[in-house]
Structure formats: structure tokens, C-alpha cells
Image (tube, rainbow, N blue to C red; front, side):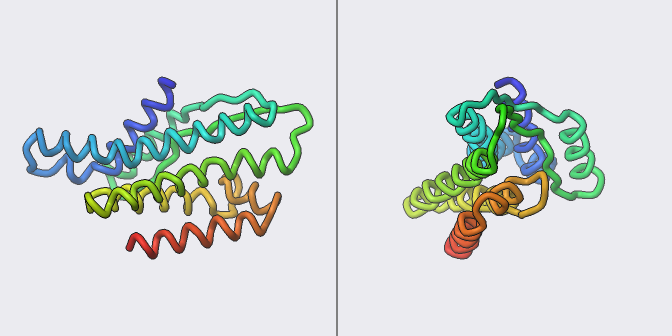
Length: 180
């Protein structure tokens, strides 16, 4: 849990770097950080927890491993060139004789969680428009993770069930357009 929390805090700091280094009063900076921590931190943490819980459900051992070098690189990229690059770590799991279905289901759990969060934030954005930010962030997390490039989730989902990958990717695009 400590590594998940540290990663979520660093990711939130990267997303809010511009606001945190600006001229806003400290209370405003804390409010922005807290709001983004809800959107980014919750999206990231629940994404990784979903992988872990699905792996356990499939009979596997699982844990999140923070990648300190990736977090440091992400901070340096943001501070030096202003680029947002997120590489906090990954949920590792192991199971004797894991199947393609195991890999696909464990991988799909993360992006599905982001899409569920995006939908919840989208619904909440009608009375509170600020929640639209949470929708967009979580759809972007889902879309990035659905890219069919190893080691991202999309590569494992597409090799298990291409139609499941296509459905999740299409839903993500539709939600991003709707949140626009």
C-alpha cells in the first residue's frame, strides 16, 4: 500500500506541477492537488488494485511494485522539459500455468476500473462540472493502458480476445468524445 500511495502522490504532483509552481496562494494549490489526487490518485490506485484482485481471483499471487527510477524520470521530464511521462511501476502476478485468458482478464481489470470511474465522475459532473476533469483523466488512463503495445494491458487483452479489446477501446473513445 505504501508504494501505491507514494506512486499516486508523485503522479498527482506531476499532473499538477504547473499549478503548484504558479502564483496561486497555498490554499489554492492544496485544493488543486487534493482534487487531482482524487481523480488521478484514485484512478491509478484502483486500476492497480483491480489487477491485483483479478489476479488473486484467478488463483495467482500478486503485488504492486513501485519503479523508483521511473518515478524519478517522470519528475525530471516534467521539471526539465514540461513533458508528462508516467511510469510508476506495475502490479506483478504469478500463477503456475497461467493461460492467455488469465493474462487477458487480469489486464482488462485495470482499464475497466478506469472506465467505471470515468462514468461515475461523468454522472457527478452534471451537478458539479469540475468532475468532468475526473472523467477525462480516467478515460485517458484507460486509453493509454489499452494501447496494444507490450507491456501495456492492451497487448495482453488483444492477444486473449481481440473483440474485447476493440470494445473497450471503442467505449473509451466514445466516453472521451462525450466528456469533451
